[in-house]
Image (cartoon, rainbow, N blue to C red; front, side, top):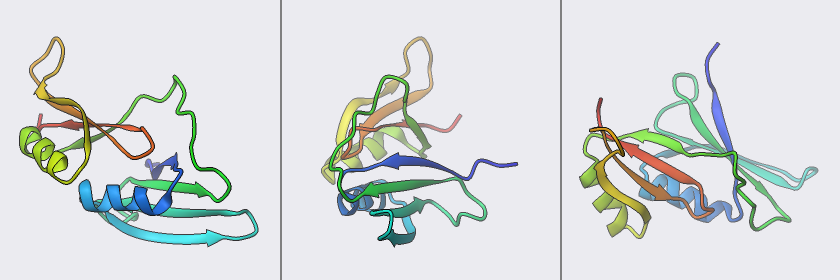
Length: 127
C-alpha cells in the first residue's frame, strides 16, 4: 500500500493551480472536466503520480468557497532552506502566516504559508 494523494476542494481552480505550480514549484500532472458531475479535477505534485504522493484539487463548478473546518491541520513540504523558501514565496505574492524560525519547543526550522483557499502549508527544513 501507499498514499496516493490528498484532495483539497478549491473555489477557483486556475488560482489554485497557479499557486501550487508558480509559487510552490509543483507541476500540473493532469486535469479533467466531468460535465455530468459539474466538477473538475487537477492533480499537482513534485513528481509523477506513479512514484510520488500528489495533491488532487477538486473544483465543484457551483461552489466558490468552503469552510475548512476544525479537523484539517496542514500539508507539509520539505525544503532545503526554510528562510530562502519563505522569502521567495513572499516575493511571489504568497501569504506567509508564520515566518521561518525554530518550531515551538524544538529546533527544527519551520514556516507556514496559506494557499488561496486558506489551507495551511508547513515548510520544514531537512531533518
